[in-house]
Length: 491
Image (tube, rainbow, N blue to C red; front, top):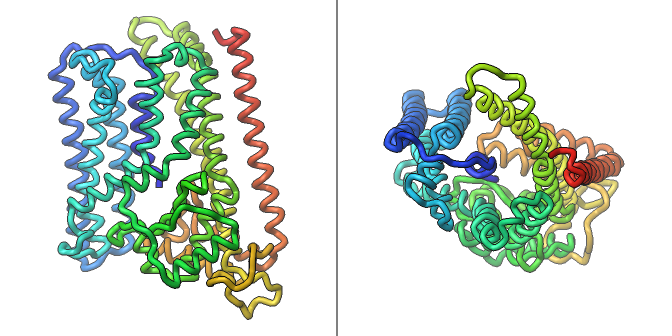
């Protein structure tokens, strides 16, 4: 659910410290920026309207059309990020905003202007892609979700709700603390502690941003709410409220937000509630509780802060790489600088790709399976003779706590819920997702547990060892980098 493209754009714009210089030809930079935005918009409308035309001619959206549209959308996203990165690092767009236009030192305005080309390109990409999405989903033009302004409004609110906390960290760190204590940004240790404290603050108050940005309402009283509250009581789970997330029935999803019980919400989309049975919704609800029970949010914060600390402490390594590349180059004086930038960029991207693309992705997939097991237990009866299966997730039935093992019926209920969510979202069961893995592999794993519940202990032990091992590696790497920094070995 995270708006990964926007987070990457933030990193491209502000993640690499540079000294912006005013462009020699400001009007030329403006024309190039306008051209990049126009190119992205044209490609988006070509993709969306072309897909809609294919659907009309064939009378339905077959698998080939869906797959082509998804791939085209991904290519468009990569093109948007590449165009924005080019404007930032090769066409001096920040220099135009900060030096030529004189916005340097302003609070937030300069940041918004630097990010403006990406925001415009993203808006046009959503607008053009809307026509393809509407055709594939078979939404009539008169339906509320078939209106382009409504579509853009909901997408913008969703993206804003997820990125406001990140923007808050950035504003506090650069525009507030950067003015009060500029010396902190020159000390890697102080910078890491600063980001960790701000990250913990944002993780705590993030649910408020979601409630402000996303259209939600409290789940009304009735059998479904009684069932979910019963699940919460047996799990020892506390939250501020269970919310219906209004998406005009265009998204089947659920999420939990908040690390503090007094400021925590579980969100179930309107389409999810409409499409699944109460037992399946209870299983999905249990999956979200599993993320809290296993403290996944807190560990992700630790991972991000630890990775940032390692990258910050290792900045001297990248600077040293620049110097080494400079000694290997000769000829044009501009070439060493360019090669240093390219070499540093490759190493930084490879390191970030390894940490987040490989390590974080693998860890996240294991956490998803942990939450899947929890979701199965919520609807499991705990009986060794199951079936026959008796419900335990309904209204108060005198039971407390969850069964120690999953039962075959509980696995079946959760597997059906997972398969229905994937199918109705247009996701193939075999499709491998970076953070979640494939639905087919997750269901196969749960069925193995259902046939041999004793395997769960080994799986939980593997996840626990992975958490401790990764935590020790991060702490050790940061400690080593800090020691080398203090000893001056990287200066």
